[in-house]
Length: 118
Image (tube, rainbow, N blue to C red; front, side, top):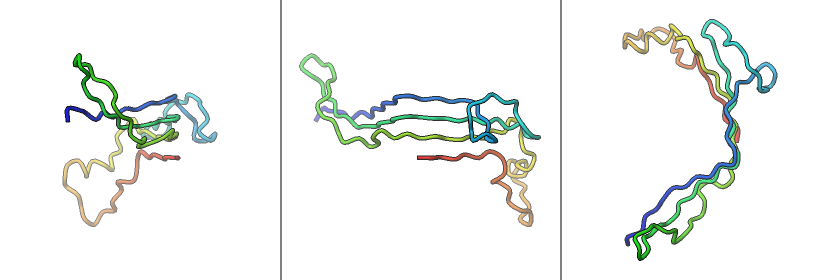
């Protein structure tokens, strides 16, 4: 079979905006906050559809769709709330240099966080 399978994605809208978590993640530009200069971003993707389509060459060598598969994702919408530290957290230095003390508390969960709503 000379056919190929191609992954195709369709997205109605996508946005990435600054937001204020203290006001329910309302769109708003804010100065970075705190000692780590945290930025807050609200990312929204609406009606994402992902499909696998079968293609095959025609008599002239052009690729044409010969079959559509059931969508892997069908009109999925999602919102991601992202907190990004612009300054490095010194607590992560011990993870970078490989000299971890087994008696110290593991603090890898400090810093940036994400929240996904489907």
